[in-house]
Image (cartoon, rainbow, N blue to C red; front, side, top):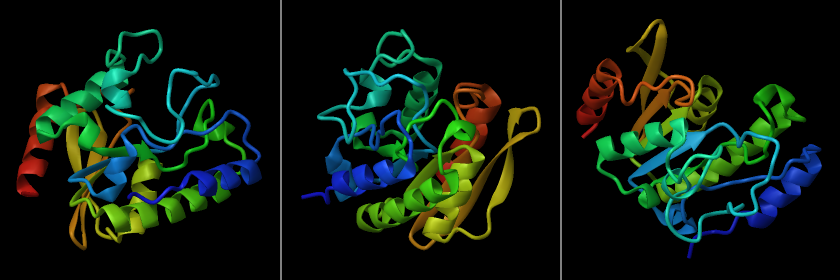
Length: 210
């Protein structure tokens, strides 16, 4: 059975001083037992807790495919479309991906988060244990801060930059013991997965990791 981090997250959340709730996984908790791919964003955004959405983990399915975000049909928000296209590229079922937030505490944006440094340290400690147990050979992060933090967690110290085909926006890759870390720009702002150039670069990176 997967380790339950619920009490640990709740205690850290209360100490953090944040007040908009928290959200950990966008996948079922079984993914904590082991996954071929991990997909990690920085923290949940927004100012409203949707009662229809899970807090700790999905009962089944994937939040990227099965939830309605921002008034869109399930799986139909711009971010969900990009992430689902990425999972299709990797030939992995969305519910099999270990998908979640580095820092579980919700905020309107990162600048609005209370105690960001302590929260980031908590997230790094949390995911150090999560990734040690799940042992995914491919970890994908979204956003520079999440990429930097997870690079520290997994020990990917030599990150190489690659063009994405979106102006000067880059992605990064780095090996770690037992796998590959791929750092992407935030896919809600840069839809590189469904652009021909970005998809080609990503395909080359993932094929090279096999």
